[in-house]
Length: 337
Image (cartoon, rainbow, N blue to C red; front, side):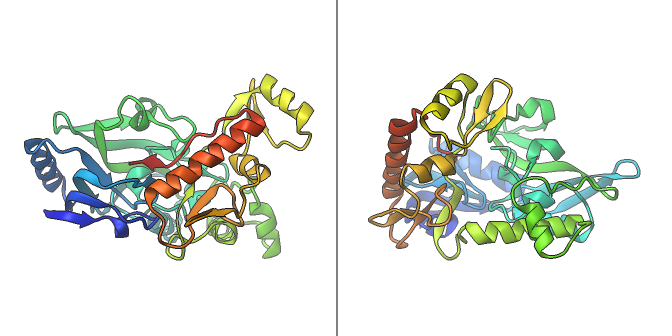
């Protein structure tokens, strides 16, 4: 247990913030000890995974716990299916690469997403036509109230777009210990129709792609337009893509003929990056903070010296700007601490 500890190395924005107490845990028993310590001192808890989905706007007056739960277990289910369980502290992209090395299909479209396995169900991470809910079986969690280990299945997780029970009624109640995924061992379902995957494969002359080919294409696309947090502080996509009623979208089309949208029944999903760019924010910098020059959806710590409050205030200006122009209120995807 360490006191007055800097969390700068533990958030991908690279902002300076201190926590009153800090500890790292490698087992569930160590985790329970840490939780009991926090209860004895009446301290709030902050669980740290890869630090890629948080914005620290101030010092944390509690106990920050870095989860180092590691390991995999495999269970073959039938001829073409495996249940692969990964502990919460495993790096997400390294886990995807591990699956690809074993020729397990289902996660390839989620390559190069930052963060750890344990946080993947929290916001139902997704990219290029795949979401966690598509290959999710179950997860084990620790109930912070009772210190009992519980199991959540697909239905109980209440997955939605960048959403789950862990961001709603279960927020602050559970910490995820491991996640089980249902993957294929052969006859993989290849998804190349989303984003620029197909054109990326064509550039490489690949007509019948493998799951490894799809992963390489996704990595190339992400690297071409998303900044590396190791080079410039960021948390990936800062905002959710808003979903608005079809009626509202049609009204906006009368005023903005080129507005982008993806219909889904009586609703339309509008790309947040497009709204931000059209509102004049792409590449714009104020002080230490900027909207990325290649992807307006990403806010960056441009100088490396930004505070969390500066980044939060910058995001507020974007929200206000988009709402004034389009009447659409963007929602932050990043957790604000």
